Image (cartoon, rainbow, N blue to C red; front, side, top):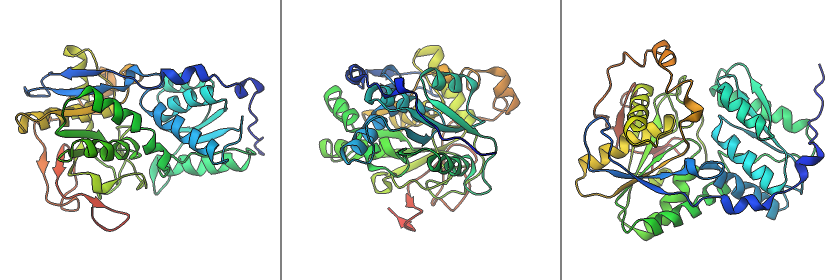
Length: 362
């Protein structure tokens, strides 16, 4: 079967620049929920309350940078791989800047997210099986290259390796410097590496002694563990994104899905603000940092809200089917001396941060 080229509808060319002032400007919430123990509290930047979510910042930055360099022509299609969150951000950026958006997802993408992306005007293509090496991400990238070949003039932002992604979070860093008088510890989820890279530099210039903790998923290859199938989406990776600023991290934590679900549900019940896998994982680690470093000011970013995850994180049948309701939850991280010393099956931490693609300690 010959696949037809993807041609944008004429209406998709119309830019809506009035959307751009809606970007960012998100509030900070003080979180004191027991996670799972009491702690002094930490600050959470609520990116779920910004138009397009956290990754709209990166999406606008990547498309604007490409337009300025002449790589993205007016009205040209934008094609990208996504597990969901960046897709929403690109749908926002596409409408604001006047570009049709084609997203490559996979069949693990929640039905509600598929519907949302299509509702926002994006065209969605799904791959139905992971690649033997590189998992779903590699399979999506292979399909993406097929789509690029049959879509004249299309632009691929390549979120994993595009420095404009990190640059998009400079506004987030600037907001934090105005909202906080001081910051000792920053906790960042790590997937593509964009927001941690964009925050660490400017915040360390403001507070030179800032400690940065990366939060990864069990089964992720980013920080030197072996890649294996992951239930959690939105953080972790089967590949090594070039955007990850390994040298910025003082330590890394790997969090399992059961711990993330428990944290999300605790947040929803008592703090009202919650989210998905990334939110649960960073909340768990931020609470640990606040508890183990008395007097430290700790902050993190909640990338999105809970609505996408009503059929997973907040669904009892889903959690039961995946054994998340019977897991023995870790109440503190298992400390390992080196990323290769042990495979993290649940919450673990390591103060040796490696850059796998460069073969050494950062």
